[in-house]
Image (cartoon, rainbow, N blue to C red; front, side):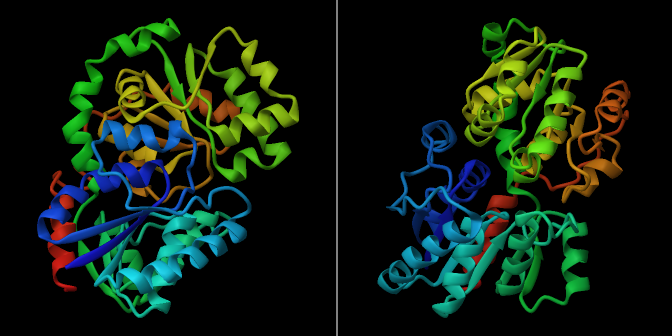
Amino acid sequence: MRVLTVIGNRPQFIKAAAVSSRLRRLGEEITVHTGQHYDRELSQVFFDELELPPPDHMLGVGGGTNTAQTARMLAALEPLLAETRPDAVLVYGDTNSTLAGALAAVQAGVPVAHVEAGMRSFDRAMPEEVNRVVTDHLSTLLLVPSQTAAENLARESVAGRVELVGDVMVDVAQLLQPGARARVETLAPYGVEPGGYLLATAHRAGNVDDPVRLAQLVELLLALPAPTVFPLHPRTRSRLETSGLLAALEGAAHLRLAPPLGYLDFTALLCNAQAVVTDSGGVQKEAYLAAVPCVTMRPSTEWVETVDAGWNVLVDLDADAALAALERTPPAERPQLYGDGQAGQRVVDALATLA
């Protein structure tokens, strides 16, 4: 069996780490890196740390608007599909790379398998929500991480086959979080101690591209009550510099600005944090798996189970709501929401049925 895997950003590299080695024991995998994340800090470091095989094809089409980026990906994927003639195309998550891979495959008559299918925030203003909805309705095989995701797809009457496999991120977390938690030396450059700081991330277009919301984001970060490590996504740094707001964050005594971090360093900071403040879908889930309370700077989330379980609070960009959420005591229980750590093998087993 020959599978063409399309990936392009940090979360997809991590997810692929749970599948790729198993898939290559089954048959041939051809990996395509679209270049959606092209900075070394958001790309190559993850291949190195997670021991992913280097991409077979680098498209180098990062940057630009969502529309322009997706169009360049489609144009690059079309001849590649004709050349490689895969039995299936595998895509992950909700990025432009995901949508482009699915569209190009369907137009070439190749079945699409979508890992992390069925996730819904029900906010169509988010490009990621549009990407995941369209990809699901193009897919032949929909590999869902939770029962909630399966129920979302049943309501939408998708045409493809739905299989509950669990979340491949659980596989990676179970393997690497224990070691990362022990890497307390990672905390030293920021002058923080385990359990004595917050970890913040922000990169969503809805938060950083709108000048009004970006200013609200800065106000929230400045109001945080504890030492806070804030790795700056290149997109976020650029918007802060353009708006003249970066200096305010640099001058705040409680904020420790950091460059983008590799998976192991970031996970070490995550596992040892008092709480996480983020607008990232993936980080919400990683925090849950690490038993770290999460405050989400969005009005909605696709990972609704983490909210229902009481470990995640949606505050949008309301600083007062964020401070109140940080004072909450996490629940005593933390249910196993996303599987048992064997999702990668279930993905491969399901892919084998497409051969």
